[in-house]
Image (cartoon, rainbow, N blue to C red; front, side):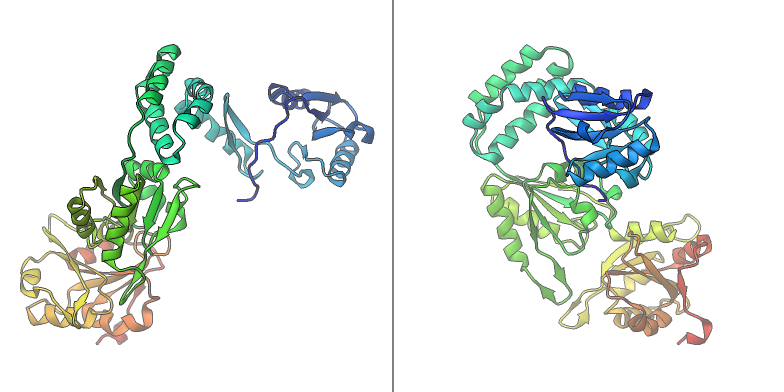
Length: 447
């Protein structure tokens, strides 16, 4: 973030605008709309800065703009010289006015036209009626705080009003009818009742999450998240949402699964809206099933929100068709986790399916995986690939046979989550790829 966004109270305060042209006039207008007393001068004099809260310069001689910037900065007065970021202590964003709501978009001075284009898109999504809805909420603000002192309960009521029939009435111009619904909501406040949402965050890219997942992140009181959840995803949450980290790495769990289950139950019983955020999909090797069972047993309401699981994300980014009509008509997801040091898989059915095998968390047990598949008839020349940090901008890939990958993996891995992909679909993916950063084991490294 290049600049810190801030909304400045200018009601009744003096603002200096230096310049006599069209741009200076345009800059003065929103300042007046914000309640400022605008002092506009064609030329700059240091005396004009006395008592002003803000200064803007445009359409003035260069020496005046330089002097205005220097004098304002020396006095600690925020100053903006239009299209001259090196002379500014603040920049003005593209504005969407839905009073009392204001939406500001800024490119940090890098691309003002792009900011204006984005503003146009957002304006189309947010009709002026949202301003009337905000004004109605402001009208009831004091009464809502008094009637609903509990923050979580208050948020529930307001979310229902802002997304339900009351909002529809405001958009239809029936604001007094909407006001009656606000009154009723205060008279019939719901009891505290929490809920848990088991949400798949996908492979790590925020724009690969479902719209429902993004919405729930923005509404959650508490987010209980795993190690693989990146900041880009967590940034979608409310700023005041409480974050609880319960991440795990292989052979080391900072929080036991049973404790996570108890935590989710406790938070929901406390009336919280909880998002249990997991990488990939919560029901694909994510222990979401265990958590769902615990919530059900405790009588806690929950919902499962699916996500893009690792095999899908890895395959898409590596351009591997998991199934292909010509060669591959099945795909199997298995885990590479060992039980008491042994990889507990039914290898014979995996080989007989002649499909794509996607092995989650399989790099440590790769030698056992190789031996088990070969012992049950898998062709030793079957193409395979390791995909580390799949679906993210840090995705790395290493292709070869299972023999080659097992030999090369210890020196290649960077300890990120790794998926093993095996099958003839991998070869089709390799044929599609044109990216130079994919590693290939040279022939002389073959085992």
